[in-house]
Image (tube, rainbow, N blue to C red; front, side, top):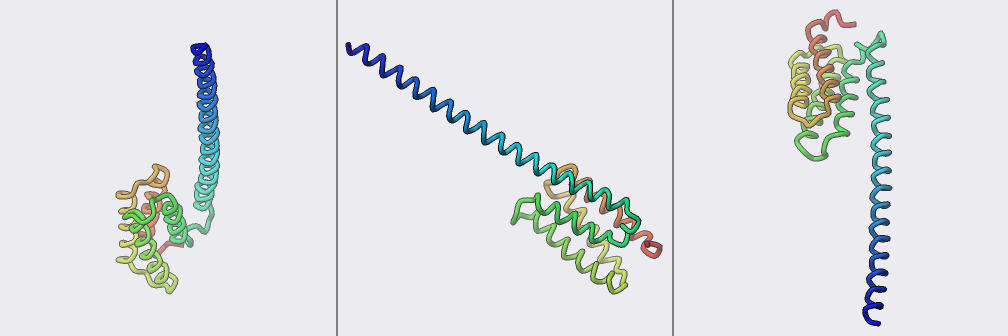
Length: 157
């Protein structure tokens, strides 16, 4: 009789264990699906952002707004860096230098050393930060356009 009861207890325990394992599996599976959907939504919004950036450079007046575009690109990169680290510090410092440059340009004062500081700051971000290939390419494009501005700023319209 005791062995029958012990067998029944083992079967009940086994059944409970299987239910717990199945429940945990469903919970993990459901969570991973939710995370994948959130990640895909993030990619969709990122894709939209990158597409709007590309269309910006197809407009005729993009040159007049280049430095604002660089600021927006830095803002975009800043959202993907880890807060509080050297990566974020580099971005914040470069944005400050960019703000100084934009103020001078708004007063029709061309300041090549300040422009060089901004270019060097963005290049440091490219070289030192943990960026996605897409963000690295985007900032490299900004550097190239700013260098072009530096070389041809008198004719830049």
